[in-house]
Image 1 (cartoon, one colour):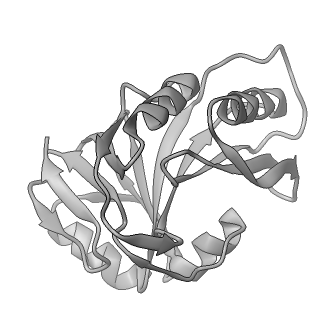
Image 2 (image 1 turned 180 degrees about the horizontal axis):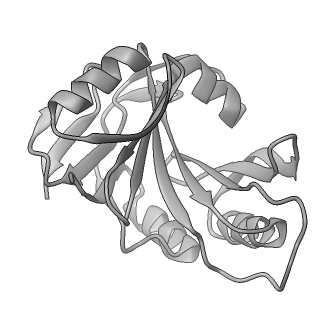
Length: 200
């Protein structure tokens, strides 16, 4: 199985980004690198923290806002559960969500999954590209969505770019660098949508 070991986010403000990642408890999996590659608008990906209940969503969002984050979509109930979206000081979009609508205990600072969702132009083509590079599919919904087995640290999924932007509450428009590097044991390559992978 291919394992994603960590993610590197490029930012002109690495110190602020590191403090934000530490506050969310993801600093073991995400690093910030000083870089200023030109980029505007939606960068084509989101990061998600999946948690067990609504008060944990609120706790993480509060920590994010207290450490340089900005509200994109306030936390609220929906058909699928409860969640909200914030933007980190490095510009990355973070969704914190749970499928539960009720609290069953006190809020903790524990997330169940860290998920990298890539917004792609063609989910079917992206799926085949990653299959050809040794990744294994764990769940797939035709041309709409696909998840891969990438180990316990960071999970990977593909979603249509417009659908992902809509889910995050932002415009799909954007140009320039993604400002993210995926570090794994899959080798060094760039996928059809411009996302860079490097050997860890």
